[in-house]
Length: 467
Image 1 (cartoon, rainbow, N blue to C red):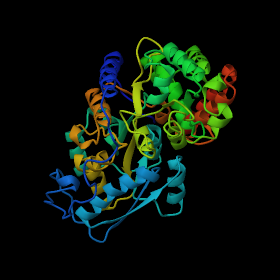
Image 2 (image 1 turned 180 degrees about the horizontal axis):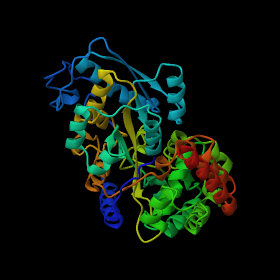
Image 3 (image 1 turned 120 degrees about the vertical axis):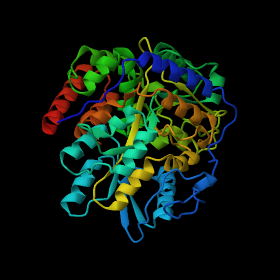
Image 4 (image 1 turned 120 degrees about the horizontal axis):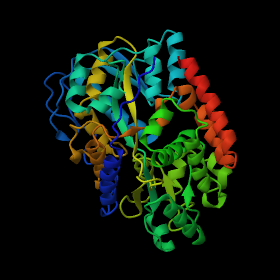
C-alpha cells in the first residue's frame, strides 16, 4: 500500500514567495560560509542540560543512555559527514551513548536489506526518498516514532513535513535536512565579462547561455555521473511546464511516462542537452562529472572557469566552500527560470528512521526533531532545516538564511522531489530506472520517444513489484 504526498494547489503563490526571497538574497553583500558558532563546544549532561554549541539554551531533554551503542547510516561524506558528526557528538555528550556513523551509497534500501538479512541492522538510517521510507515500512523494517519525537514534531514541524514522515497515518520518520532544489548558481565574473544578467524565463536562460559561450566560457556544468541531478533538471521543467496536478499524477504513476506532457518536458530539456557546446565536456564529459566536481569547476580558475553556471539546490554552497569563491560576491544564485507560467519550487529532504528498538534510537530521533540538533549543522553551512522553531540567526549567512525562511514561509505549499516519491528501484538507484534513462537521454537527447518508453517500462515494473 502506498501513501500519497498531500500538497496544496497554491503553488503559484508559493513560487512567488520563494522567488521574492531568492531575488532578495542575490543582492546580499560579501558573505562567507564560515559557521557562526563553534559547532562542538557545548557541554553534555542529559536531562536539564542548559547549553548546546554556540551557547544557546537547550530546548529538549534527553535521557542518560550510558553504555548504549548506536550505529547511524547516511549517504553523507566529506564536509556533510563532518557537519553531521558534530550533531552526533552533541547527542553523545548529552546522553552518554556511543554513536558510530557509517556512510553508504545512494541505494540505501539495498544496504539496509543486506544488513537485516545478516542479523545486524543499523539502528538509525537517514533515507533520501519518501518512496524508500514507504517501502521500508511495508517490509516492516522501521519502528514508529516514540512519544518524545512525536512531541517535537508537533511543536516544530508543519503538517506537510510531518505527513511526509508518515505512512497510513502512523509517523515513522523525522525530516532533519531539507533542500530547495530550484536554484541556479553562477560565477559572477563570467556573467560580468559576458555582459549578461540573471534570466527569468527558460528562453532567457538559453539566450544567456549562448552569450556566455560566445564570450569564451562554457555556460553549464552538469554532474551527469550522478543520475539524481538529471532527475532534478527534468522535475523543475516538468513542474513549471505541466503544472502541479500533472506533477502529482506522474509522481504517483497515475499517468504514464508516455504522456504528452513528458514528451514536452523532455523536448524542452533537449534544447540544452542537445547542444554539447553549452555543457562543460559535452555529454561525455558531463557523464563523467560527479556532482561535487560540477560545482567546484564552476567556481575555480579565476575568470576562466570550466563553466559559468551550475544547477542544484541550496547544498551547492557547501561545495562552493571548498573553493576560493565567496558567496554573494564571486558566487551568486537565482531561482530556476519559469518554463511555463510560474517558476518551479521543488524541495527534497533526508528522513531519519529507527530500525531497532533501542531507547537510544528513539532518543536520537527526538534530538533530530528538535531545533538543538538543527542549530548545530545550520551553523556549519550547507544545510537547510524544515524545523520552523530554528531561529534564522542560526544560519551563517544571508543567502542560506533567506532560502530557509522561504522554505518555512511556504508552509505546506511545496512539491517534493518527484523521483524521491517513487519506488527506490525506479527513482533512486544508480545505473537503473530514471537515473539511467536520463543519463542515456543526456547522451542522445534526440531519442525522446525511446526515453519515454524506457521510463514507462521501468516505472511500471517498479510499481508492480512494490504492490
